[in-house]
Image (tube, rainbow, N blue to C red; front, side):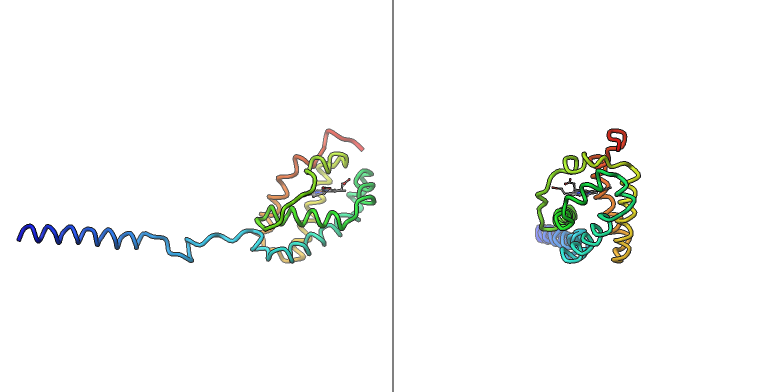
Length: 163
Ligand code: HEM
């Protein structure tokens, strides 16, 4: 009799552990679901390419940036389409999309432009205006600004170059 009770007790304990295991498992499709990439939250390559295109169209003729003769000379020499292609691939990759950036490094492609802090700030202002025009939400805007910010040290040559 005692032996039968103790056997039932062990079975009961196993059942409790088994059920508790189910209770503790994260619910699939809620907390267990993978967070969406920034690339997906922006809507993928189609809207990203449109935003980049508008950004380059605003950046290239900007009269403040073109007061820097090195920037002005480069924008006359380098086709906007080429910049759009590379920057789109870069944003696509950096936000978790399927593209691969194959252009030059940021230091190599900007050193000769002698970009100052003020010119960097002007670029950020234009970038924010374009994102606002396309109604990119605040969270995604901040994430994009953070990504762009990681390139600043390689792009701004303040103190190193004069024009
Ligand atoms: C004030 C800010 C910036 C200005 C005025 C600027 C301007 C330019 C210009 C004129 C070129 C062509 C240079 C040449 O080939 O001689 C260039 C290249 C490029 N820029 Fe910028 N840029 C700025 C910031 C950025 C940022 C923040 C990014 C990306 C996060 C970026 C991405 C690129 C790429 C991908 C290329 C092409 C690289 C290659 O030729 O392989 N630029 N930029």
